[in-house]
Amino acid sequence: MDIKIANRLIGKNHPTYFIADIAANHDGDIERAKELIRLAKEAGADAAKFQNFKAKKIVSDYGFKSMGGQVSHQAAWKKSVFDVYQDAEVPLNWTSELAEECNEIGIEYFSSPYDFEAADMLYDYMPAYKAGSGLISWPDFLVYMAKKGKPMLIATGASDIGDVTRAVRAVQAVNEQIILFQCNTNYTASDDNYDHLNLNVLKTYKTMFPNVVLGLSDHTHSPAPVVGAIAMGARVIERHFTDSNDREGPDHKFAMNPNTWAEMVQEVRTLERSLGSSDKFVTPNEKETYMLQRRCLRAARDIKAGEIFTGEMVEPLRPAVPGALMAWDTDAVIGKKALVDMPYGKELRWANLSE
Image (tube, rainbow, N blue to C red; front, side, top):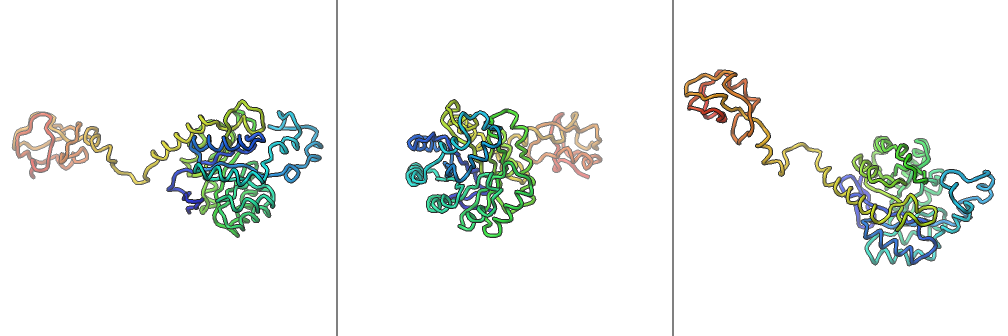
C-alpha cells in the first residue's frame, strides 16, 4: 500500500522519506527554529518536524516530583521535568511562520500534537499527523487525529505488541493510512542503545499489519540502523535534528547534526540504488564479465577431424565466447565426432561436431 504525503508517494517502491525532528532544539527562539529548518533541508530532509504541547497538558509536576528523583535521560536535567517541558514548548502562534518558512524552501512542515487544541489548530498546516510513542497509551486521542482523514504516523517506543495492536486496530477502524514506526525511546545517547533497537520487529509488523507502511524512529547516531531498516522494508525515517550536539538542552545530545544527517541520507540513497530488482538476471553492466568469467568447453589438446570425443579431450576454461558449448554440455559432447581440426584451446561449437 502506498500513502501520499503532500505530493510524495510513500511505499515499498518509492524513495525513503526523511523527517528531521527539531523538537525542542529551537531552544525557545523562533529564528533559531527557522535556521534549523533550512539546515535540515540542506542536509537532505523531506520534512521538518516540531512538537506542540503545553507542559501542564502533557506532564504532571506533582507526579514527577513524587517519584523521588528523575530517572533515565531526565536524571541529567538541571531543571524539574515540568520546567524542562515548559522551556521546550513551541508556541502555537509560531505555527504559521514556521510552516511558511518550510513552504518557501521546499520542505514539508510537521508537528506532533499532544492535545486536542494542538491537533485541531495544526490541521491546516500539515500533510499528516505524527503520534509520538507516549500517545500509544491514549488510543482515544489517536482516533481523534485519525478521524481527520490525513495519514497517521505512529511511533511505538516503550510498548509491547499488545499496545501496538490495540493502537493500530483502533486507528485502522477509521483511517487505513498508517505509517508504523519501530522505535526505541531511550534518549541517553548511550552506545548500548544499539542493543535494544530490535529492527527485526519490522518483520513482525510487516506480517501482522501488511497494509501499513513501515518506518524507523530512533535516537542513535549511526546510519547503520537506518540502512538496515530500509533494507527490511522501512520507507520513512525520523530522527532528531540539531546544528550542534554540544548545545545544552534535552534533545541535542542524541540528535543528528547537518553533517551526520547528510551522510545518513547519502548512505540510504546508495542503498536504494543497490536494492534494485527482485528478479535475477544478467544485468547490463555484467554483459562483458558474463563472457570473461564463465567457462566454455575447449579442446584439451590438438584434435583432428574425425576423432571421437572423450572426456579427456575437453576442458572447461574461460572465456565463454558467444555460441560456444558450455561446461554443462560435456556429457552431450562425449561420443560426438570432430568435423574439423581444432587446435589446443579452441572452443567447441555444435556446428563443428556430428553424430
